[in-house]
Image 1 (tube, rainbow, N blue to C red):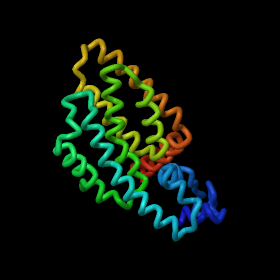
Image 2: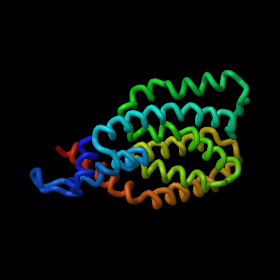
Image 3: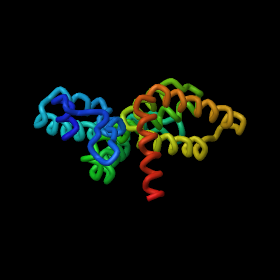
Image 4: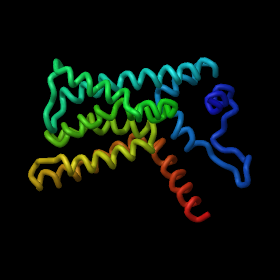
Length: 212
């Protein structure tokens, strides 16, 4: 909230000399403020922005249910359920009301990924079956831009899912794996404005933690 207030008042700086050797805030922006839902809050006063952040958190948790329902009824790997099957509704509600959603309610920077993860997984399955990569690349780029940290974790999960759930011939698996890596690199390039400074800050903090 303080960061949003400072940006609205024009007192937010990408670098400050306060502190021993100064510090930068670009990585903080990349981590907390690059979600489209968060950026909308910049156009409102601080009190309204806090209310909007809460409303957007509830909205994304609510939308995660229909997104998961869509995944369950359109999945390409395994059995796709019928949209008229009550169990699909139960599973969708279970996803949107899971403990992760309740715990991460205040971590608004992670909720874009929670909401869109089933869609990302569906696009990966489409890639595994047909080799179509564009939808996967652009959605992955959006999630990396929204929050690089959780975006990278999801990419690692997608790689594991690709190998453990892939029933294609070995030659096809290997060929499409390199294509998948190129797709990820394309996504990284589209979202480099947040991924690069975020990764640099993360590596610096890890180095400081292990050497101190």
